[in-house]
Image (spheres, one colour):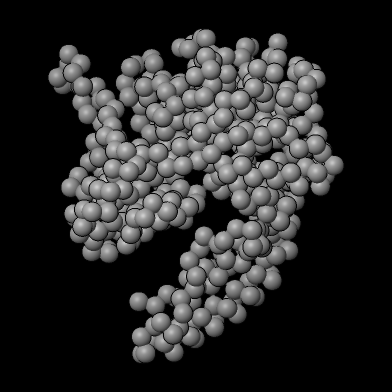
Length: 450
């Protein structure tokens, strides 16, 4: 079936916007437009006409929309400046070091893996770590989304002892608690969330703010700015550019110069730069006349294959057993060998901000994935979408599904409720891990919080 002119126009507009944001620094994640020569002879002329109409329609819409996008970007910049002002005036937890982790560019840069990695590394250093998250795309009634929720290191509510659903917390906070084994508090007001978490875990010494550079309820002691290969794009705010906050010299000075409660040494600077492949991006600072900040020495790699599941556990009440979290793990080498020699069809699905990055990771492992599905980021029921897609594509039930950890937590939970992926389908999630050089964590000890 040929794509409609509307579909082709929207696809071309997305490609134009991405190129306007990043130029040639980041390959477009969107699939290329179809080639008329590849279409059957009877449909070739029809596809050529549709492509021509889509080309003209997208060109006209692009020229008309540019002034609107530019005007809206000024509103985004004003709102970001207001939020930065509120953040500087906000309070801090009564004790403990507060570290905000975030990015400036829209889209996934790996904040959640970095928070998990930081939480593990700081825990190994002897700190009592907790994570504060807003719980983006939390489910449930509106009233419950506005209240604070605490999840323990075992993904249970400390007040009831029951396992908490990823729908109630959001997929990323649940994944952080599960992987980092630290308590997580979810709420729009991070300060209120920290207070509630302190009731159950009073000995916290480090607070990690997931996606915390733009929140307004807590003023962090340190900021970790995460960048990827896209840099800052064209330097403009959304939607004319990819930035949530425009990078200016004033903002760089506010984030880089030591505050009143830090030492004068450079390692006590408020801004730390992080990049998963070690790229420094020093030009972002030197171009503004600023000294380049310290950087986290970190690397990212595939770790293993996992499949989480929920099973009832004995609780003394047969009518209301507690659910327990279980996990099957395969080493990376064993899993890849098994998948390559199984003789079964391999398919992949990803519901993250940049699904093409996940598919490239599978290709780098030498896995011949035949079918790929991109799911909306933070989709509430990826299993239902995957099941419908498999039926539509007439994929065999003995195929093996490969997916991301963020999708896996929802697949595991929904399999228990019977609303997700059919139980006969075998699936595995690829666990990607960041590792941090312990010596690069010295900035934590150089910051005074009293």
